[in-house]
Length: 529
Image (cartoon, rainbow, N blue to C red; front, side, top):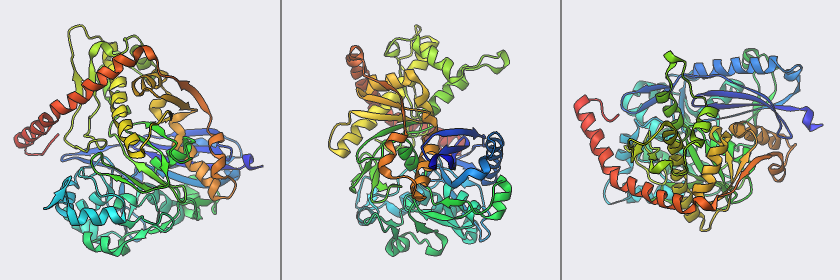
């Protein structure tokens, strides 16, 4: 039976990798997580050590498999996913030449402005290059400098010796695949944020020579391209020894976390949406067409499903806002801690609307529906009557207001209303957040079972398709719904009014953030904070 064969799935996240065993029926049999360090640097740098990734994966894999008798002999395939727009330059031996540059890193913004800026321009992009990139790729590098191509250009400008010595520039999951198989390859979807591929024929994505020439990147420094749903190669002996696995297990090409989560949400039909709420957040769906919205910074890019694109968007900090709040509230010396269930209970003590307290969740800039790396968040309308429970609920609601702003942009992109949304990610474990999302968005929210493991489940289901043991049509029934949240009509007028004020707060303060950061940068001599 297919259910007797399992997939070993790896999801490399910002806070560390998860490793899970998933049956071909989509059942999560067990999983483990190991933390990794985040290195934040002056000027917008964000890095991690790939050696720490591998060691964390090794420890998590051993702990997982040691706890399930006979597991090592029942693994049918290995599938990797992970954070996207994270660059790993490696030498010919596959050894990283420097730390990985993460999706949060903004140091490449200057290079993007230099290559794609100029006069005449639209939305900050020189017209000739804008039209070329839109025609071939369906998009253009973001001004924020957080795309993979921006990381590459930053290295070329500021650490030229690393650029010269690089054999291949790889995305995070493609680096893991290199460790597992010895094969340097990228999937059609993982390579997209290099913005060097012709995406017009979704089944034949390849680098375009004119794009390579315009940016000045050598083709030989880039990995070969494969569909996400193919087998990349067998597990090589060195990696098998590290993980205590038999060599030769098939390793699939795999897909980044955004696309894996889409599959793991069960929303694989055209225009069927899911909302991810983790450190960051997004609201997306698969579509059969190409489209771009420069004003709201959204486009369609290749997905893991053959013949389909997905709507690419992201909001930078969602669950991260709750992590910051927890850090501010906790007092380790007094053993006062606030794990997530406690924060849920505290938030439930405050009334809807949090007594008029608004929270802006832009703690690391924003990408969609506005792209502004200088944007910063905070509380507004703070008064003497505000209690701890108001602060906590306001964070939940502020993320939901931001999601509603994104929902409006996605619906405009699709040209129709969305009524039902699948809910995944670590934040989706919270019932109160699910209800707040339903109330603020005025949409039905379906919480997926074990929502924090959607990417693990997704890459495992992708492996099932790659092995020929699962069809795309069968995936939705393998992703159960744990709870459904309906909008409460009694809260409709209140949340409509507060959402209008949320938007007004952005319009009134966006210039302040830029001026403040310029001032701080001038005084410190280190740039913005």
